[in-house]
Length: 171
Image 1 (cartoon, one colour):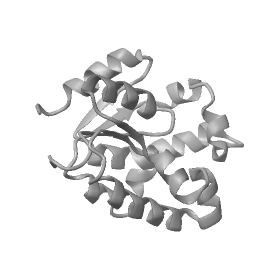
Image 2: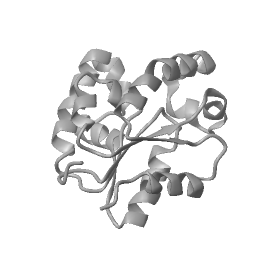
Image 3: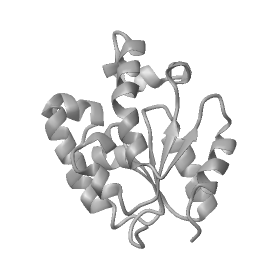
């Protein structure tokens, strides 16, 4: 594990709890929390979904990679990546030195997450089909980059947090 950079990186689909668990983990560990989607918005002045529409998926992923190269060595707390960030070319290699936890959630539990579709309008008109395909496409990548997988289906955030912290290497 790297000594410079995040003590914990969380990956998973939108709605898996990366921000919620990330903030809780940062508080428990006494470190800062950073949401990479917020970094992308601050850097480019638009939400990730708008950037994908403006630039296209390929250019958006290049922008994610370029920003992540700068963010990783500077942030020594907990980092929650965007749902698609680990799928960008080169990102899995960037994550190698860091402790990565995949917050795993199934389709039925994602569909129950309040506000998910409103936050991610690209899921329309058929959220179930879009989410199913996204999970199918991304799960192997999340699994590949992760040092640990923590299931979140139907679990309380406090219980998920305990599993995330238990999966961390001793510091």
